[in-house]
Image 1: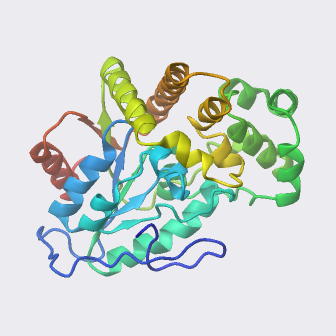
Image 2 (image 1 turned 45 degrees about the vertical axis):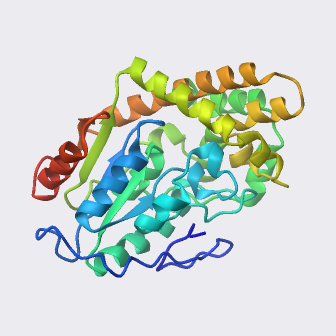
Length: 331
């Protein structure tokens, strides 16, 4: 299974290749090496993977994952990762490269993704970066101002705290961040504490400390009305359960904090223990996913360089939007 990528080395991560099909040729004369990446963003369940496949076929592209949880292998059904069939159509990178027990963050993602994008561009291909993890995308498009690296000792200390304890500590050292952050997400609270404690500066001061992009950014934002997106979330959640998401989770031996806190995982664990029935599990996952999608939409609205495109657009329409951006449209 081609879950990895080409052109980088990172200790502890699987390295499996995804050679481009031999019969692919550059179809768009404007895409001369080295092409700048095309970013395809949007909330969960917005259809990014389908649109990315369309663009990769048309524009001689290779798809690069920017979804934080699709980096982990063994939870492909839970995270709705691209199918094996789709991965065989065009090269896909950075899917399933980390063990479920590992902890990936935005800074590590940047270190892994940047040389990969350079490698794809050097071969005359178009890197198409696809994902809904706003902070991961921000780290890739706008260089962060010297955020401290992860500290394993401090991280273990914080992981031993309950969510309520972490929130209270964050309220003491950084009230603005405590008010802004999603307090129901332990991973976000923990990382905010970690950055504040290691740097000696509130993370709220640093979160906006990104350098201005040194070049034009080409980005498409897949947009849906909230009601239509919720219907898609419900459909995908039902399909996830039908496709054996609970059984997939049950087969994992030691999922780490990132995977354990992923949307759907706590609910599936309760289902496996018999604490809730399938209908309740499904509804709880829908609610959690809907809340996450709302936060994603808020994040992407602030990224004014993204060009909105309706989620139900045709293949012709999204290809036209991509051509316009790559030829020097809005950035």
